[in-house]
Image (cartoon, rainbow over all chains, first blue to last red; front, side, top):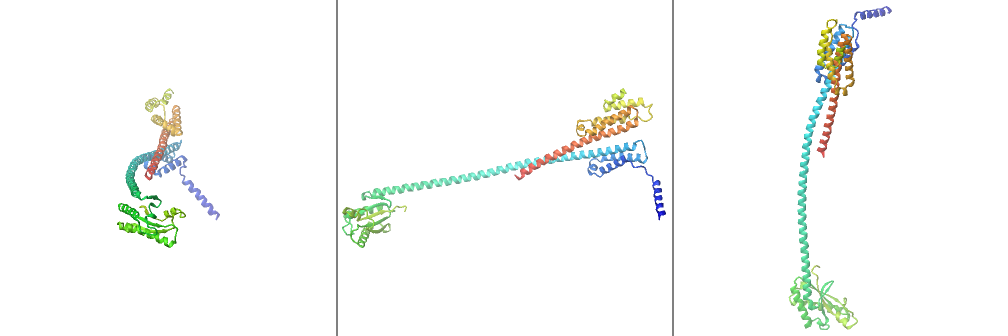
Length: 303
Length: 131
């Protein structure tokens, strides 16, 4: 066992002695390693192929010196030159790659400047179109508003004219009814036909009463729009049933008289208030006389 | 010595001419070839590299090249032509390393700046597009 081991060791030693290759040279190893790194760098092979070739030639010289076992630092010197040539190749490649980037960036910048100008022009066009659109819309709205305002003015003037006409009509009616002592009240123009125009306790109109009724008919004919309310009133003497009946009959008598003058009955309404709405004090004879009456109310047209 | 002193301050072309003269004078008595043309090439290379861009972006590399050229001159003056040739060869490549490194440093910087400018413009474009 021991003998075998010893013989193997001896054999190994013998073989080692036989294959005595030249010593490794650190400078050369370093140059080779640097060259291999550069050779595997695509940037260097693309942009500095000639420089890399020169580095390789330089490395071959260093390897040649090493193979012919030159002394006096020749291997180190040539390895140094090879290493520097690798550095030159690498830096040249880096420089040219940067130049490519610069020209590409310049081209991109030009392209983007153009795009920027185009987009600015487009934006300006768009803004212009928008402002034109909004101007048109504003003009249309303005025109519409003007039309509406005009309509409103027309309507206001129509209303004003209608009010004026109504006022004129009322004034006219008032003038026409002046002879009949018409009074302006909250309920409209009121004409009172007094007790003296009727026979006592009767509902027939006396001559003066008839004249007044004829005058009323004339006014109503002139104002075909006018409608009247005929209300009968009494004093508080006698029983209510009688008084209500009398007041109604007197109102009806006025209506019949007007109808005979050609006033359509749909323009007239009668009502009896009996003693309910005294116009004066019932405790005196004069007051009671004032309470016995028929009131003709010209209804306001607007009601 | 006087000739060498002058050489230090001549241009590459002059160096080449003077180098030729030295070769004629010294050629007879030296056993190894005098690296006159290699010295001239190194001088030219260092001079070409010695620019404001290089001293700004690769000052260390430039100093190495200048120092090595000075060593080469010193070797020449003591007639150590083997050493002078090597140093001159190295100075030439050192100067080129300084030069291309400075160039690539400033080019990378410029590339970064132009990419940044493009980015700014792109952002502006996007803002414009979406506004």
